[in-house]
Length: 155
Image (cartoon, rainbow, N blue to C red; front, side):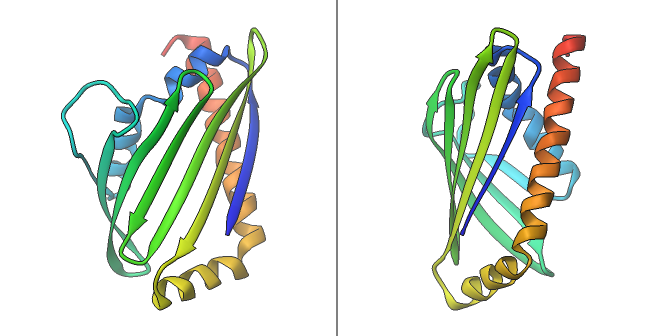
């Protein structure tokens, strides 16, 4: 199952890449939402091979997931692989300079089930696929507006 969302951002590509690659900020946001996030290494630099272990509740069950940055080509792309007991996911984040002050951010996610319970979970996602796609696009739009504000105010 694949999902794609795109959003244009009024900020230069390098600034957008820097803000999107502020993983410590994302880690703090996840923790505030009740997700336990631990980096596997203590390096301050984020590059291909950076790995996170996460624990979160989904549908009343505690789930564990490993996320690895598989590719980082500044300032054009980042790739991540996520795996859990029953599911795998690939996420691509692509950056395209539309002009010196405008960047297109594209997010592509694909999910695959490895077990029967994961297939059932994916099937339920497929049933609500259009709602999920709209929600993903809406969240990416909100995120893009936040990035524009951060860039504008130098945060």
